[in-house]
Amino acid sequence: MLLHRILVADDEESMRWVLSKALRKKGFSVDLARDGEEALRLIQSGDYDLAILDIKMPGISGLDLLDRVKELKSDLLMVIMTAEASMKNAVEAMKRGAYDYITKPFDLDVIDAIIEKVNRAREITSQMSILREELKDRYLLEKNIVGNSPAMREVYKTIGKVAPSDVTVLVQGESGTGKELIARAIHFNSKRIGKPFIALNCAAIPKELLESELFGFEKGAFTGAAERKLGKFEQANGGTIFLDEIGDMPLDLQAKILRVLQEKEVTRTGGSQNIAVDVRIVAATNQNLEELARNKQFREDLYYRLNVVPIQLVPLRERKEDIPALVEYFLHKTCAELEVPGRTCSPETMALLTAYSWPGNVRELENTIKRAVILSSDPLLTPADFPGLRIQRTGEAVATDELSLEALVDMKLRASLTNLDKMETGDIYNLVLKQIERPLIRFVLEKTRGNQVKGAEILGINRNTLRKKIQELGIEIRRD
Image (cartoon, rainbow, N blue to C red; front, side, top):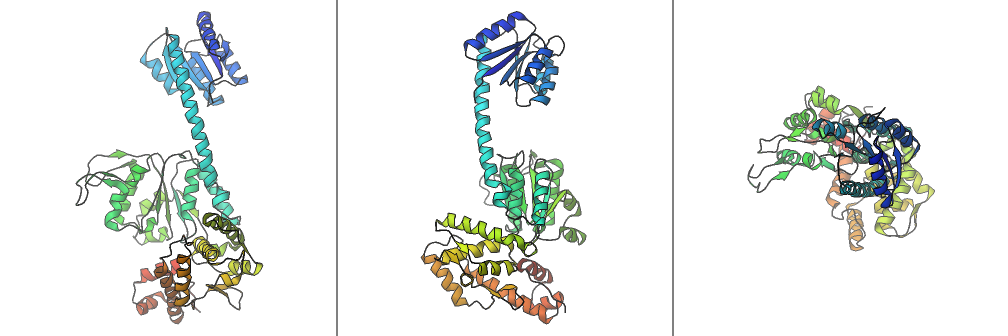
């Protein structure tokens, strides 16, 4: 939007006359004020695009007017004029929020240049505003984080309170509950929107590579470092970095993350220069960091620095009232992505999906819906389209561990041949492994009556590994 209405405030009549004549000749609407008080009244009652203010006026000075106007109309651009070309005046004017500063006497070309610069800045601001709205629309909570249960309403409230600030947030919850989505919602509803959002899964990167991923490295820092590489913190400068599964981060790296929080600077591997970074940290974990800190498996000081504002995501089995809305959301999303006709669920199907405990949480539900849409050509999805679920006598839906390897291979092969499966048709190894792991561990724990030490011994794995598997697979331990 280009400039239209301009206010000129100066106690010299000749200056007001010259500026008003020149600006009106260019098609601007110009109002004049003889002193600071008159200028303030006009600004309060009018809608100006630009104000050109003399630094020294009777009553309210130009500098004081800057302070008053910033409180009233923070988006009004103001240019300060002065006959005293001192560094003090220039610094003070810019510090108080002036858009520009010019010294009398000046050529009218200077005013033309300022107006051109303002118009260019307003055009960029307008484009950025459109981009921000597009980004907000993409990441609006009600469009991407589905659910109206009491637990989710509390999450929404917390996001709304914490997003505008720069405080560190710790998102906790089981795998598949949507921790990264929460982190993105915080970022895209903050003042850092338009700046980078960088996500890093600390558990997915080998320990020896994690440090260089986070902090970057200099050329020649190690074998294979052919050129300098910026780390995730530098890439996220000005924006937000999301550290997922931070509970799996090695202790030595935890100390360096603590330093970033305290000093707001990083040092590349193989380098000696401290590089300032302005980054907001949102961390996430599916582990109990407080317990890990007590057991000296996680730095206690880092835990307290990360846990400024905690957000706890409850598992899907504890907010089953949200499942119907999630099912409808994923049906619409999947059909749009795959460009296939819309699908709906029969009442029996919805009851089946609502009854199931979803150990993989929202992620498992989404993949299950996607699989059903891919493999079914019928617009109405029935329980037969979900062969991995069955109803127990208690009315609870459970995964059918008896689902045969032949059925799994056939399902994935058909999806691959039809070229419709966009969720990685080559994931059958992990799919079969999960089918075997869950019933095996559950069976052993049933036989040991929930004794994890004995169960780990029978399985031949470490107790910590067993505990992690129990959490990942959503296995309930019964001790009766």
